[in-house]
Image (tube, rainbow, N blue to C red; front, side):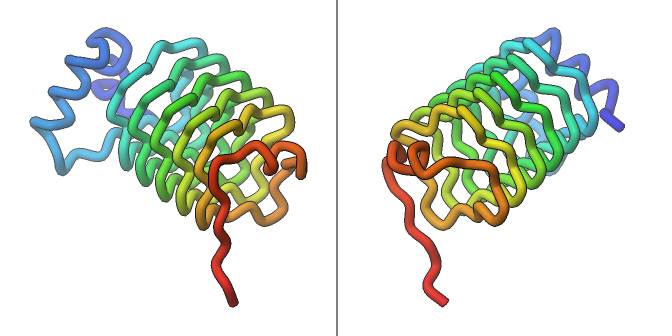
Length: 153
C-alpha cells in the first residue's frame, strides 16, 4: 500500500516541493502502490523509480513528468496525459492506457506487455526496444510513432 507521508507530500506540495524532496532523498523510493491519484496534476514531477503499481491515475496530468524505471504495472492510466513524459525502462505490464495521450513520450525499453493502448495517442513517441508482447495496439497507432527499433534475435 501507499506510504501516507509520500502521498501527502505528493498531493499538497506541487512539483517544485516534490522534486526538491526527491533531490534531498535520492535513496528513497516513493511508495505509491494502489494510490488513488485520479485527476491529479502531476505535470513535471520526478516520479522516477516510483512504485505506482496498481495506482489509479485515470485522467491524471503526467505531461513532461519523469517516470524513468517507474513501476506502473497494472496501473489505470486511461485518459491520462503523458505527453512528453519520460517513461524509459518503465514497467507498464497489464496497465490500462486506453485513450491516453502519449504524444512525444519516451518509452524506450518500456515493458508494455499485455498493456491496453487502444485509442492512445502515440504520435511522435519513442518506442525503441519497448516490449509490446500481447499489448492491445493497432498498426495504425504504430505508424505514428517517431521511432521503433526491436532487438534482433
